[in-house]
Image (cartoon, rainbow, N blue to C red; front, top):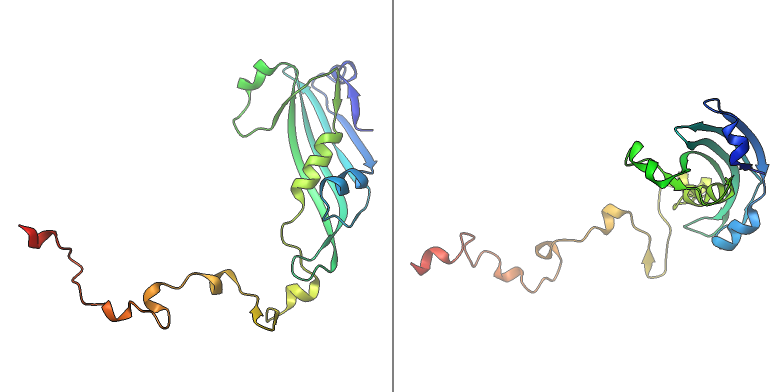
Length: 185
């Protein structure tokens, strides 16, 4: 289950080992993220390439996660289709061979276990904003007694001079904008 010995992987020297597996990580992910209501088993596919003494994993994860709407808390099924690339270093000194933005993970045992990567990448791929179809298509935002939902543009702070009942509005124009340094000479 997405776990290979280093000895096995070395046999694929410069030839990719392909994997295609379905894993159930629902319980672990629900424990780590209480917003997850339900989750289908994860379909993980990809390749592992042994090159330069290290192991590069190029994988895809597909699942369906049920999350609460961020607006109404109604359960919404969200498809997850996530691609990831990670390099597992057999020796940490190899890190200078890679680009700065490459994901590098030192191997700490004689096994390459992709389950932590699957779980972490799934959690990272969850959207922050989840809406039902009706909420996505709504023209007006919800409101209630003494409250209303606003867009970011509507919630932008209003400059003090444009606010109604501004106690400093009467002072506007009383001082010149050039500054007082010129009068002190």
